[in-house]
Image 1 (cartoon, rainbow, N blue to C red):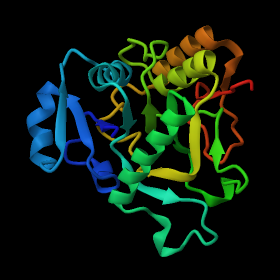
Image 2: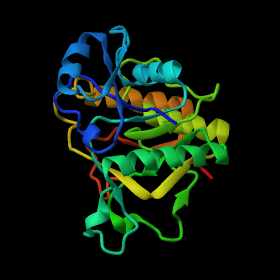
Image 3: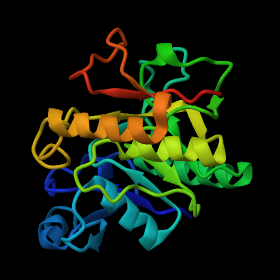
Length: 247
């Protein structure tokens, strides 16, 4: 069984993911432990030292602490089936128990395949799903739902206010392990909390996006590209990025 870890910060009363995925463990700083326990009494709280600052060091701490894990954001509102003919069908959204089982089953598949990174589709829009490609093996996996099977070649940078740790781990995995595994039939739906209080909102500024972009560009070269402004989801600023895995 793989632990499902919600990485959270200053959102004790707004951890939406626990209603979408069963049996999640919430990882928070020591100074926020009491508040998170008060609002999330049915979930285990994993406490890290307050000295661990920022999402990238936090993800690495979790990986070091528990090993294989599925790390997810705290703002998931549902796990969607996007392969259905009619996306308005009642069973579009998995129950929290089904979502838990889906992750567990896919973890076992990922181990059998031999990958170190696995996840699900990035969009709940059924129009982006291709029926002849239920599984994808060389695309970016969003950090909002990221499965990690430990490898001595994979790590998150010790960069406190980094806003691209998921791009870093995806690019590093592509370089060393060549492929990942995505079940494109399912996708996580997120609440629009990026600009709200808590999480990475305290430091997700244009300047930090710029620093992150050029840091990634220095490490991975042309694999890091500016995000296309014509994509369905509009860009926030010129330093938004995309990962081009060249195979």
